[in-house]
Image 1 (cartoon, rainbow, N blue to C red):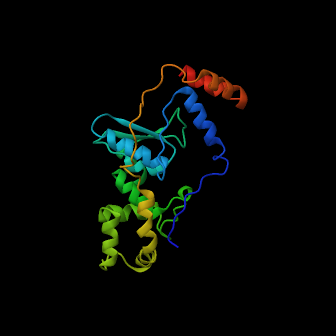
Image 2: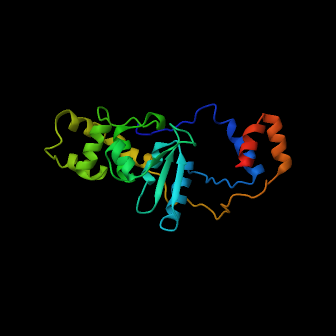
Image 3: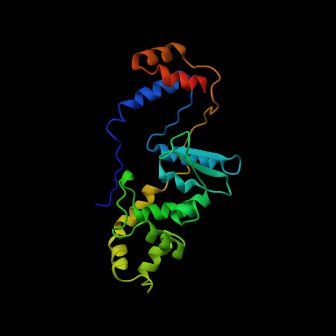
Length: 222
């Protein structure tokens, strides 16, 4: 079928209630919307801030590179390699240098063609990162590339044409999976960092009960 399923690592699920409790004890806002992934919440908050203030999205998920927009002052601080201490600062210049595409949207189209194992995205067989970038740059975006394939553009031929045609069902579905929502129904909330602990008793019991004294102290110092 054409369904693309993203699965959570099995050791992550048991940690979630604990993370929720610690955030509540610290008094740090946590936002989640039924039917939307965290990426969608981040995308929506970023979109709402456009033009009003600079945004740095801190993540280890390359999917969010699609939000990068120099004009709107949106960067991604990518933590997968250097961690939070030394993230890659992803701007449009970074995308151009590393992936040979010049915008966040072009990166999303490239990711759809290339695929991403960590997201369960198979990509188009036989089309790697460089070929994907070449095609997106030549046609402007994925929709225009698909139109060119359908209309028999002579520049797309042989095995490449066959692969793109065979991937048609995948390409119908994948962009919806890759694209993050910009309009999730997020309620109003207080995003300010707390100046004091929300629930000291709960925080103390979590620290001692789960051996979290050191990381919690680091948060309090910060």
